[in-house]
Length: 336
Ligand SMILES: [Zn+2]
View 1 (cartoon, rainbow, N blue to C red):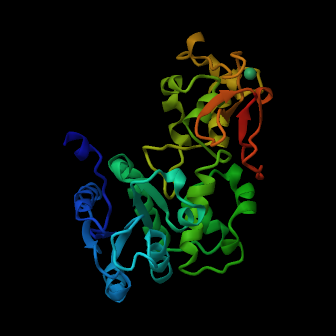
View 2: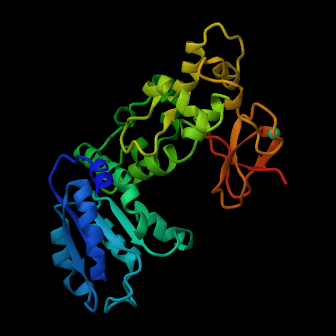
View 3: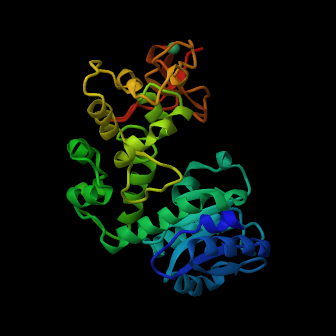
């Protein structure tokens, strides 16, 4: 119970979650999530009902909600041959483009196809809703923010990212076309959200996660907590940011390393950061392939790119499943 309370977050408007399911048991999850998010909820159970029959009413109900939650499978509804989680999501996305949609699933997320993945904002395992509360809250808040004032040009987008000046020109050059071309509609909200959440925040480049941050500091993942506070101002606090999955602006973190160690002569941040007094030899990072010092990158050990480790550039090769994109780190895999 204690844990639940500490996870609660404040969303400004008291409003509702619209939950679509075919299993009454899931209502407990809806109650828990609504409690955590401080939102009310509408739970609609379609077991043995035709979903499409009353669609008009559901859309009306969902209109004033802040979040749509859909059971991915929906195999106990009457019209299950023509309707499933992704198609329900598509209908809601088309009619209510300003609302975030998450899917709750009991099956392994890896087994969900790309089309379905793209129609949802987020897919969350039914047993892991609690640990994703802050992420869901950040999604709801982010959509609220963008909905209130959809960024119509590059400057307005940079403003909601609160990006460092040093990065602005590069960011502008890769901003999604809907913004560049000024063709902003309510449908653009998902595109803008996808770009921020699934490109900018997900791919290391402008923003980096804790393992990358530790690597740039020349230390192990667990040792980063010793010096993490030094980089407090370099944390990404723009739209969709969330405290359980922190990102740092790479450019700010690296320049901070040199600012804090002005006398250190190396041009490499992973050398310069090791002179922090909190850091000792046991904290130094080692390459996961050759076990030598100064791994400069984070690469993966596996084909699915699920297990990241610190590696030397020369102890890794480009990951066959990923293409290099401008201004982002190349995704690499450990050598055989
Ligand atoms: Zn190595």
